[in-house]
Image 1: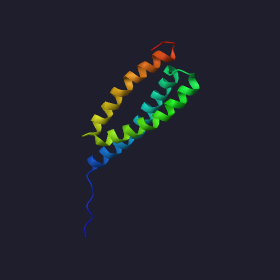
Image 2: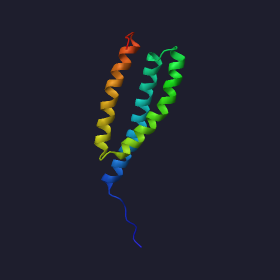
Image 3: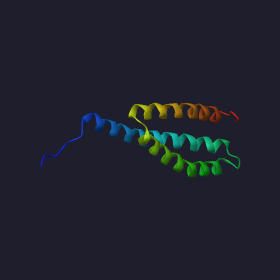
Image 4: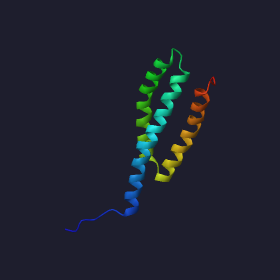
Length: 99
């Protein structure tokens, strides 16, 4: 029996989604953890712990979302569009800004 192989474009799309899920999920969850450390009341240590707990849910949601999109390009664009405002908020609060 002849074994069928998947096309290269499909395999590259899956590889791109895996990288997007791992790298993008880590980036988004890390940024939100740092933001929570700065904005939650009760000190940075408590905010950091709360942010770390929430980051597990964010990471899981990003992984699910990346594989639910129609294309890998759409997943990458969505990750960038989510990371930019979060990065701006983090930059603002880390340099003394108040939310």
